[in-house]
Length: 229
Image (cartoon, rainbow, N blue to C red; front, side, top):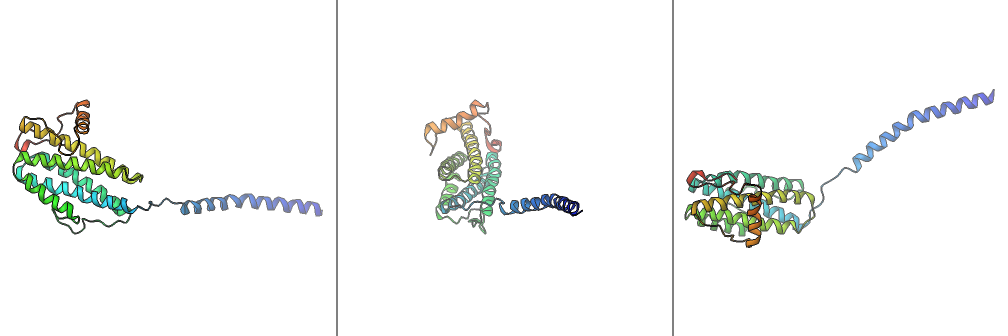
């Protein structure tokens, strides 16, 4: 009789344990999932400064193109300005994600925190206001500088978020350079020569469009028929 009671009690205990342990295990798994939730990595000072600089540099491109479109009415400027707004917004998203201050906060069109960029903006507007041809060279120059700056900053980081955004910006700048160069060539009948990139790098970028069958994408022959990037 005692043996039967002992066996029955043991079976009851095993039944209780088997019904409750999975619940405890599931609860423990859920708790651990919360604890190991992925957080954004902390940026180095150099990475934070790179984001801030590129935020303003993309704003500079946007503001210059808006101004030069108003001056000359070339559609290539208005189309690329819209793309540059997306570029600077993408960098702003990273600044917010990593808690880095935005240098464009409170800045109107043509206003910049970085004194070098402020001086460059003023200079580029002066150059682009001479003629439509000069304006197109300014646009191409901005994109060449943008390409070089992006390449430099991509080489200095391993942060996946930054690399992904900067790679997209780099592709956009290459497209924009091709558009400005093609429009300049259509306007002048001459061959565009790079102003900051070396000849081999420029030919590689220009040749990418030729290989895809879109060498003249974004070009326009005159006035308000300037092309789409």
